[in-house]
Figure (cartoon, protein in one colour):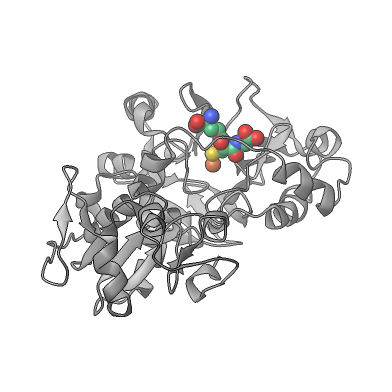
Length: 366
Ligand SMILES: N[C@@H](CCC(=O)N[C@@H](CS)C(=O)NCC(=O)O)C(=O)O
Ligand SMILES: [Fe+2]
């Protein structure tokens, strides 16, 4: 089998190209938007037929080139069915096989860094592509995109550490220039999960990481939910309906409603709080009746949202809820508005706030 490991310096992402030498059929794992020319040139130079373009998960730190490569090479795009991105041609699950010529790789669900992380096993080549589930001497963070330390702990132990010791592991990132590791090496040397670390120890380590959010997260996640192609190309955008509220549109095109209006019309709208769960339950509180749907999960949940009620999005100060409103327009919702100034503006007008751990239906899905 032909095998190449490629690197994107800006996001420290590894991209992998695998091909069947007899038929020239190839697949690519975790390609990066900015590297599409490099990758396309290599595919053409090696006279390969790109049949699949795969992402191990909805990346938060860089934009994928899945959509671009599928346009250019007619490759079919692949993502997990659990990641909330419905843009892919094929949504895969545990045990599925992705065939290219005489070869196939097996899908292993390894959620925990995100809800839709998968690893790909090339059993004949004794190697696995672990995405951000397991990194070299590390692992993916678990503090966004429905991440969970408990889930990741189970994934790594059951789906990766259970592979033969000499299986080589290729991650989606390395920030220190390392390129590959093995099951035996990580079982012995991984500081977070190796040497039989308990779930309690692992959860404590993950809870204390305190990493800043990836620089490109606000752009990358919504874009990757559309396989990295411009939103309008992959959806059926709605024209904004302004009849249901006094809407003002910002210079960036975001439709906004104001807290005084909302306080008198709460019962008429579906209120979506697009912050992260800890913010929703945190000190700023949330508006009573709001459903929690973090921004990264929004497009995955869109199919369950009603079209017969206006939707108002809310976040801390109006940035993420503005992006959410634009996403909803792109997804075909016409009556949408973002709460101007967010929960902060609402609270500063002494409007009612609720605190604590109200767990709503949309919060429980993953
Ligand atoms: N500094 C990077 C972010 C790096 C980051 O958060 N990477 C994620 C993977 S998407 C992670 O899980 N890192 C684990 C770690 O650094 O321990 C950026 O701004 O893009
Ligand atoms: Fe990631």
